[in-house]
Image (cartoon, rainbow, N blue to C red):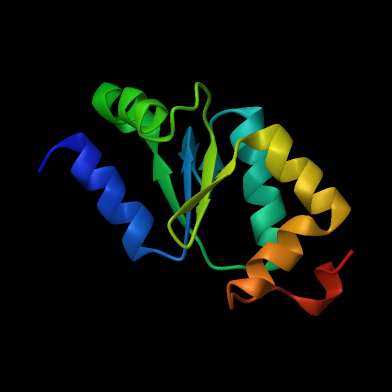
Length: 112
């Protein structure tokens, strides 16, 4: 399986996927940490994939989305954005709406 096939499979077989530096339990960069905090706050189940485990994966995810930075958030197979975009969406309540519209769990207390 090529790295592109692996990424495509992960994106399409999980409702919410965060390609990040480190793990949800131990983020290894501030931007990844911010997205973990947002997703944990919302209570939306997600899969974290550590791009630091493989140079091929780290470059592959950038090529897959045609997006130069990590972390990258995918919801129901669609690229949502990186840290700045997701943080702004969260602050505006747009991320919560997107997740709810896709039929995903969002804690009521997290509604902005």
